[in-house]
Length: 165
Ligand code: HEM
Image (cartoon, rainbow, N blue to C red; front, top):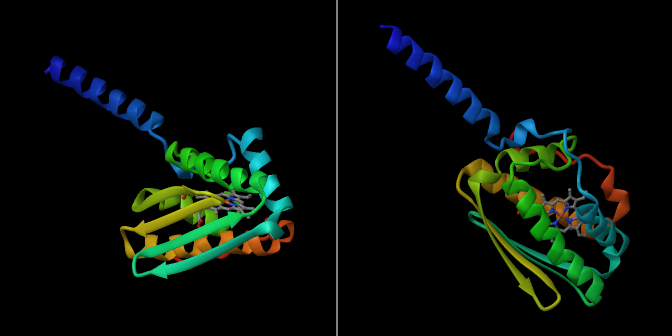
C-alpha cells in the first residue's frame, strides 16, 4: 500500500516536471524578447521594404509565397529572418504576443507544415495547415507579411485581427 502511494507521488511529480519543461507557445509571451540578431534582420526588412517584391498564391490547404529583393543585403536578411523565426517558433517561443494574428499563429504553429526554400534573391515558403483553422491562420499570416512588405514601419505597430477567435 505504502509502495503504491509512493509510486503515485513520484508519478505525479515526474508528470509535472515534464510538463514544466515542454515548450508551450502560450506560456512564452513576455519572458524572452526577440534577440538582437533577430531584431537586426527585422529592422533591415522594414527599412528596405520598398525593395521587396512578394507574390502569394493561396491554395486549398494554405499558401505558397515567393518574397525577393534585388538588393543582396535584403535578400540575405529575408533568408536569415525566416530561419530565425522558424527556430524560435519550433522552440515554443512566441513573437508579437500582443498582436492577435501572431498570437494565434504561434498557438497553432504545430498544426502546420512549412517548406522553406531559399531562392537566388530571397525565400519561397509553402505552408499547409493540417486543420481548417490552421489553414485560415496560415493564410492570414501571409497577408500580414504582405502588409509588412508593402507598408514597412507604418505597419509595425498595428495589431492584426485573428481569424478564429
Ligand atoms: C515584428 C516584425 C516581424 C515578426 C515578429 C515576424 C515574424 C515572422 C514569423 C513568426 C514568421 C513565420 C516563420 C515560420 O512560420 O516558420 C515569419 C515569416 C516570414 N516573414 Fe516575418 N516577421 C516580422 C517582420 C517581417 C518583415 C518586415 C518582413 C518583410 C518585409 C517579413 C517577411 C517574412 C517572410 C517572407 C516570411 C516567410 C513566410 C511567408 O513568406 O509568408 N517579416 N515572420
